[in-house]
Length: 222
Image 1 (cartoon, rainbow, N blue to C red):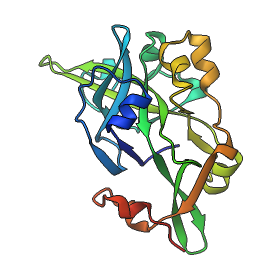
Image 2: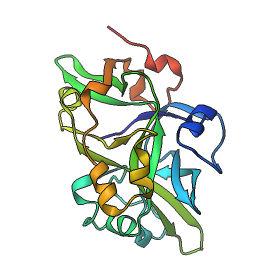
Image 3: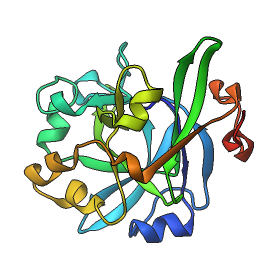
């Protein structure tokens, strides 16, 4: 799963994913993105890739703009075509990616849960595969939101995350199949990212609180 991550919207990220136009705030960075916050999302629009800010935690169209009582920050790849919350945006090809530079996962230890920062081994940008939805409230206001899709964890992540899940991840070179491909192309993307291309290390428990932010959260601890 994915419950906290690091993201930014600088020029390098926009070039990497060919984002144009953009509606998000340029040079925005968060080292501790948390559920229900507005997050940067890239989605196809008129033959281009648009950068927008959406609520993290998908609100179904039928919910009339009101967040549900259950968590919708993650959607299992195995059920996106059948689950009531996700099958409509999947059928409508409302696919998106959520750019990131890494995410956090917690490992159970004898001394409590130890957070780890997980990222690409070379530090390159990547993105999570997601779905987005628009839900209209009774007063006409429209809430746009998104979810991150999860897949079975690769061996490296499985050693950290007891539930054995990880976000479906793409690079700038592979994101096109998810964003603009056929349903079959998109389904093929939903696989564990190669463990040999990733790295992870322990970080401070300060990341446990979404009130904490800043580059110091990425510092390795013993």
